[in-house]
Length: 295
Ligand code: C2E
Ligand code: MG
Ligand code: MG
Ligand code: MG
Image (cartoon, rainbow, N blue to C red):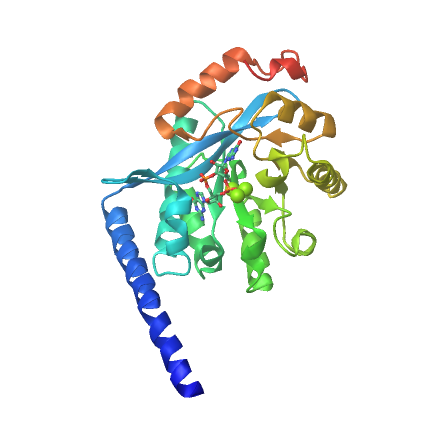
């Protein structure tokens, strides 16, 4: 009978679902422990301005130094975290740590920007702007204008009004807002129109193949054009080769980020890397020379 069939299907599916839930619970417990034990860290990937090869700042990217499994990338644990009770605490840790790191560089005499990825659930946290403000205030002298909050288009899906309000308040505090992975969502143009946004990041999926795929190239060119019409700077991710950088420069892209410049670096390697970069590409020397971009 249909009822029997239904029951059989239920029994077939149930153990898997339970197994899935069990694994998720276990990983969440592990993440809670890892937070306690300070096993998370931030890596930093350089962002370069194309007009003069100047190092503008870094995107903070989370890693988990797991005692048994080694260094884990966000794709290996962020999905588990999504919409869990730990998403906000980990997001708070990231904010605090990124701002703390910025301040260390400031004390060393550098004005590096830092871009921080903010998850949808975290941005919706009612006191998000309050503790962000308190983290900033705990480092007097730190310029909030150097902080960019990277939000995904999907962030605003649930409550666009609230997302807009929070982001507006952050901008009043002097922070910048960037729209991450632009073009990958279903409503990119709507968000560009409704969210208070200072800059746009073109997703790497378009950049990686733009030299061989005419459609991808058309999309990259169009997003750059769109950003210019909105008077917003635009940064391209996924710059893996000098040819990517050259093409983006000729299209009028403002900034680039990618393995071709540097992989994300541990915090302790950032100052040496920045020093190297400045030696090779003294700001102002031969601005715009495409063949000077890479060693
Ligand atoms: P995203 O914000 O779009 O970050 C860029 C990702 O592209 C990073 O991966 C970076 O390592 C990678 N990438 C950079 N240049 C290249 C390149 O030239 N080629 C290729 N193939 N990849 C490149 P990662 O670090 O694994 O981060 C993945 C995603 O995880 C990030 O995408 C971001 O959405 C999320 N994420 C990372 N850290 C955080 C965080 O602290 N908080 C939140 N909420 N999300 C984070
Ligand atoms: Mg990002
Ligand atoms: Mg991105
Ligand atoms: Mg991405």
